[in-house]
Image (cartoon, rainbow, N blue to C red; front, side, top):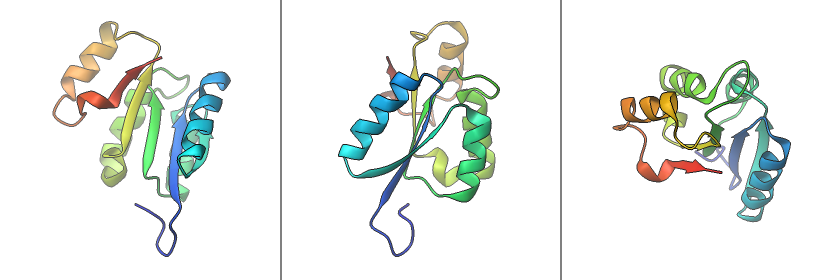
Length: 116
């Protein structure tokens, strides 16, 4: 999903913990991505409306609009970008996170769930 006429790959990191978003930014930048950071799903919605992203790293638990809600919005409004989602969580796959994962098993590949 590179921007037409550009070889730049774009990544969006949706993370409310500054230390984690900085690590993600460093790693993705070193892999050649242009990286934007959103502190929650609401902020990410506005950014996704303005740019196309090749990859979205989304924390499942963020304030205001969590990663699950953002993913559902992506599936409805920008389904092509929903395919490029990787979820992160510090939740260790507790209750509602496990339920969400199981409900979306067909659309979320196993390698797309990472726990910090």
